[in-house]
Image (cartoon, rainbow, N blue to C red):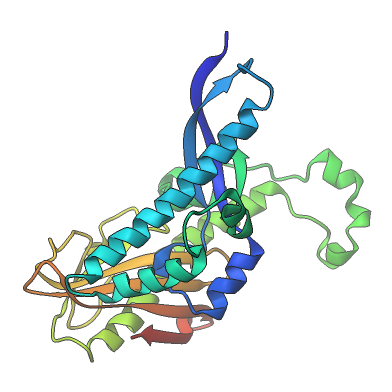
Length: 293
C-alpha cells in the first residue's frame, strides 16, 4: 500500500532567468536569483497509475506560478493606495516576467527548473549556524584517503603543493573562516551605516544576519561609533532595519536590504546595499560598494 509523505523539490532559476534579471538590474530582495525549497504530498511506493509522479510535478509547477501571480496581485492592490518602492518594482518585474494570464507549464519551464531533493541540509548553512566551539569538537582525518593517495600523481594542477589535502585540513580551514564572520560583518555594516548616516538622522540599527550566525548577540560583537546596534526587531517604530539578504560563499559578495522607519509602521525609506569585500594584511575592507537608491 503506498504511503503518503512530503516530497521536496528545489526550485532553481534557469540560466535564461538569471541573465534576464541581470539585464534589468532586478534587486536581490525580490529573491528571484536564489533556489527555494517546495514540498507537496506524494506517494512512497506504488502509485495509483503510471505517470502519477510526473503529474504531481506538473501540478507543483502550476502552484509555483500561482504563487508568483499572488505576489503580483498583492503589489498591484497596494499600488491603489500609496505605491511603495517595493510594490512598484514587484509589479514591474513580475508583470514583464510572467506575461499575461493564463500562465502555463511552458511559462514555468522557461524560467525555472525543479529538482527532487532527498535531503534539505547544506554544508555551508550547517557550518554557518553551528557554534565555533562545537565545530572544534569535530576532527577530520589528518591523512589523505587511500583512494586519493593512489591517484595523487594524476592531479597535475595542484601537484606543486603535494596534491589534494586531507579532509581534516579542509575542516580546519572552515573553522578559521567562521572566526572571520564577525570581522567581515563589522566591516560591511560599518560601510553601510556610514552611507546611511547621510540619509537619515536615526542612529539606531537592528541587524539581521540571515546568512550565518555570530553565536552571540549582535550588540556584543558589532560596534560602530555613534550608532546603537542590536539584533532585536524595532517593532517598526523608528530607526533602521538592516538585513543581510544575500551572501555568496567564497566570493565575498554581499547584499543588504535596509529600511528606515520614522515614527510609523511603514518604512519612510528603503533600498539595498551591494558590497564586495576582500582581506589584506590589515584586515577586511570594502573593495567596491554601492547604495541604491
